[in-house]
Image (cartoon, rainbow, N blue to C red; front, side, top):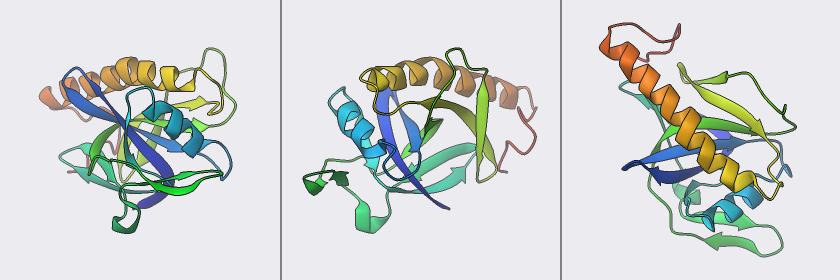
Length: 161
């Protein structure tokens, strides 16, 4: 499955955790990605992301033709060192958000992952991404792995096997 989104990853607690960034054209996805790169994130994909499920986890990568490239408005398409793929722990929609949102999930290729809304052009957006990955992404992955160990699917349709 290919989605119109960006994919960034942060190295947290010994592993790469990916955040899938979605939103309409002009919402600030690539701008947020560029600023997040300056905050220690790594690019995986910009503009289009190939998604797949493996062993109950969601993964993503750039299509071959876009690998290692990022669009920077006003400068064009530029090369950027990128990870070849990563496990996705969180989905972010670039849109208005509530001050104290309830936990939310998004479904991709039969898997549910934590989701939140974020205003991509806020100066604090890269810091919010990292904290969300540290807290929401970690919580969801831990809860998912605990449920699998107990032999229970954490959410209906949540296990791709």
